[in-house]
Length: 100
Image (tube, rainbow, N blue to C red; front, side, top):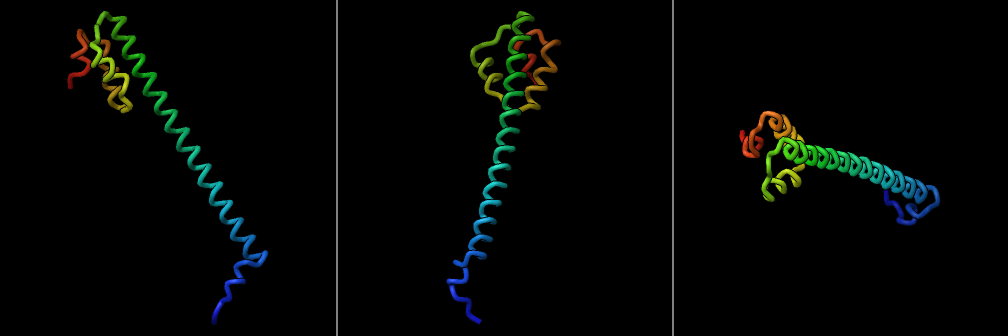
């Protein structure tokens, strides 16, 4: 049995194809937006933790070098930031925060 190519150009088949493509595109866009939103939220949380860590160290009189400040500011690893934050109130130096 041979299917003539014009069959795929009929209004019913073409409409089904267009609908499927539109639904797939919409689903992909929605998934992309959700992923982007989650990624943006995680980046914002990391930036907030980094900012708090830098301020907390400053309030405790612990000086940070430019390299240490950059290390904290550029960190996007939530677990690493949590480790550093857990050490901030016991630390007597910046090295104590980064140790371990």
